[in-house]
Each structure stands twice: as structure tokens, then as C-alpha cells.
Length: 128
Image (tube, rainbow, N blue to C red):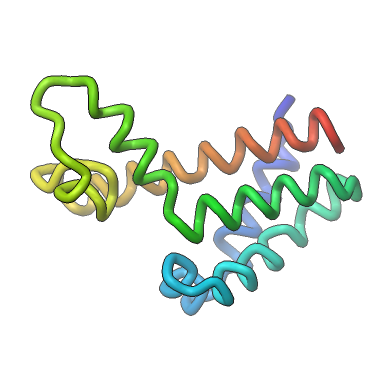
């Protein structure tokens, strides 16, 4: 279902083609998020030309990055356990404030990447 090409396309689009401006502004600027998504989607044109697959890849990437949805997934998965914290305390990364900032940030980046890779793989498998 997932190929090395899909993972490479994700990494190129999300890291190599993403400028510092996109990184800083995509969570608060629709323009920055849109520009990032256009550049992000370019490497996937080498894998598929399916309009449906490309629309899913671009659309979900926009939504996940623009509103930093990985934070919500992280927070929700921690909610049922004892000692869980309210959203107001976890909104920066989804993790409670006592987790070291470097660790919370990297864990959030991993969750974000896994979401993108899973969605992209499914889009290409089913529509590409």
C-alpha cells in the first residue's frame, strides 16, 4: 500500500520544498498554508496524475497543517487516561506542559508525518 516513492515525495514536499516562511506562517495564514500545499503536492505528480488522489493529498495536507490537527489527535488519545489535562493546558503540542518542550514538539512532528503518510498512501492506493 505504501511505497518508498510515496515517503520520499512526502519528505521532499514537507521538508525540502517548504520555506521558513511557510513553516512559521502556515498555522495562522491561509495564504502560507496554500503555497505550502502547492509545493508539497508537486513531488506526488511523479507518482500519480489522478486528480482525485492529488486532491485528497493536497486537501488533507492543507487541513492538517493549517489547523495543526496533530495536536488534537494527540490530546484526544491522552484524554481517557488518569491525569489527563484540559485542552487549555495542552494546546501548543497536544501534550501536557510537564513534558519537555523538545520532546513534545518532536512527538507532534512524528504524529503529523504519520497522518500525512497514511492518508497519502490510501489516496494513491484507492484513487491513484
